[in-house]
Image (cartoon, rainbow, N blue to C red; front, top):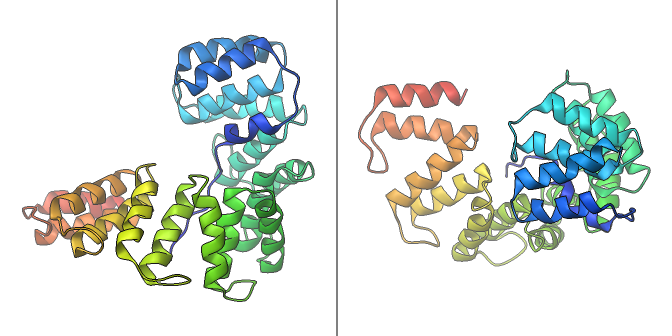
Length: 301
């Protein structure tokens, strides 16, 4: 089972933090949630200029995600730093994530850990989960699965879907903990019920494989679809395979091709390589197209 570890959307937890209310931030947040990004940006800008950390963090997020503005990692990092300097844990986590991924700055795992620890010391669950990922994968520190389990559990115990999913994955693989499919499924389900796409995908995988629960391709397809509809390339690829094989859904080369292409366009390299084969061999109802195959093969390297 393949997995990616990513930063959760920080805004999902902002409401849980006890912060002084600011009119511009509240109006901006309401506009942001409605998808009115131009208005949100205007409202956040007022309080951000006055040094309000939450507004600075929102503006950073908008620049990171390209919401109402062009994606600009350098500007996003500048804004996150302003909020992080005031001790705002979500922004500290985002600064750490930018160092972790090399967004707008040279990748530096030591700096990533430094910023994650600042937020984790405030018991911020996403930072705790991200520290676990550094220990699990040996990024900037030696691989230490015991530490990974400890940090994932801290996050999972607070209801963090990222922490629950990552801890579930360790249980599914028997890494740092006893292999326990039932525990993995229970953790994935908690995160999936929070609409966390990676957990939905992983729950689909366990269901398709009959690990920790009865094998059910139809239910697996439903979980994959929930994650695929959120744009997760891994889930789109898995759903494509079910359509191709006619497992849990009616066999449909057209649907298989649609989801495979979405997965490749989402940046999932196995989907790119699969598309190269499709166009090389003329699979899924497609004509043989050597140049298209070559282009996807290059992208999938």
